[in-house]
Length: 466
Ligand code: PAF
Image (tube, rainbow, N blue to C red):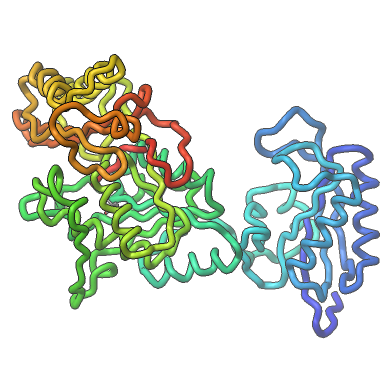
C-alpha cells in the first residue's frame, strides 16, 4: 500500500438498509475517490447483517469497510461522511437505529484517539460489531493496537480524572458527576441514569470518605464491593469510575477543611458534628478535580443536599446541583447502603418512617397547617413501632431547610414548599442502625423515583448515603 507524505491511513465503515443498498455503498466509494485529500486504497466485500440493538422493524443491512489514504483530519473526514449521507437521502440528525440509505462511520484514523462530542475514534463500538471486524479481517487489517473502548474507565488518581474530564471538555462534551461512597443500589443507579440522560459523559466517584465519619462510626465496616459497583456503573453506561485510595485523596500534609455554617447545624449536624465538614470538603475537592457541568445527589440525604447547594453557591463552583428523587423499596423503605445492617425484625419495623411521612403528608394535603400538629402526627406514628427510637422529627422550609416557626405555617411558606425530615434509631438488633427519611409535603406521592425534575430544581431525588 502506497502512502504519500502527509497522508494517514483511515478506515470507514459503510452501511445501508434502505433503497438500493449496494448502489448506495458503491456510489459512496466513487464519491470518496473524487474527494480531494482522499484516496480509496481497498474495500471489503459487502456483508448482509441484521440491525444491532433496538429499533423499529426494518430490512437487513449491507455493510463493509473501506481503507483510505487521506490528508483530511478526522473531523474533516467526518464532515465528508455526513455530506455523503445527506446526499444519499438521509435526514440528519437521524433518529437512533432507524432505517438509513447510507451510514458512514470513521472507524479509525492512523493511531489517533479522540473522544469528543461529535466523534469518537477509534469508533466506540468497532470491536463489538462483527459487520466491522469481519470486513477488517478480510482486508487483513492489524487492529491489535486499536483502542477498544470498554467503559467505564477506572481511575485511581486525581490527575487521571482531571486529565480525562479536561479531554471531554475540550471535545465539547458536557460532564455529569455522580459522587458516591459505593455499595451502589437502585438509588445510586437512578442518579447515574439521570446523568446519562442529561450529559455527554458521566463519571461516578466511589470513595468512602474518612473525613465524614466520626470516632466510633462505621468507617471500617462501611459496606464495600468495588467489583459489583463497577459492574453496576458499566450497566448504567457510566464512562468513568473514580475510586481513589484515602492517600490519593488526602496526602499526609492535607490540612484544609470547608465548614458550611448554618446549613450544617442541627439534625444530622447535631448528631455528627464533623460530618458535614467532611462531606463539604470532599465534594469541593471532587468538583475541583472533575469540573463537571452537573453533579447529582440523592434527596434522601436532604440536609447534605442543602449543605452542598450552599457550598456551591458560596464558593462559586460553576456546576448545577441536580437533586434526584428518593428511590424506595416496594414497602416504602428509602434505599440506603446501610439498610443491609437491619436484621429481619428491624427491617419490618423500618417502614414506620415512610408510614409516618405519608400520614403527615395526607394531613397536610387535607389542609392541616399547624406545625406542632404535623410533627406530633409523625411522632405518634413512629411511636407505634417500639423498635424505633426517634432522633428527630423536623419540619423545614423546602428552599434551604431553615427552621419554621411554631404555630400555623404561613400560606406563602407552604406554597414555596415544606419538607418533613425524620431520623429513627433501631438499636435492638445485633447492630444499631439509624435511618433517615424525608418528604416534601403535598407534592403528590413525593419521594418516589422517576420524578423528572429540571436541572437544579428543588422538587425531588435518590436514596444514597451520607
Ligand atoms: O452521599 C454520599 O454518598 C456522600 O456523602 C458523598 C456525597 C459522596 C460525599 O462523600
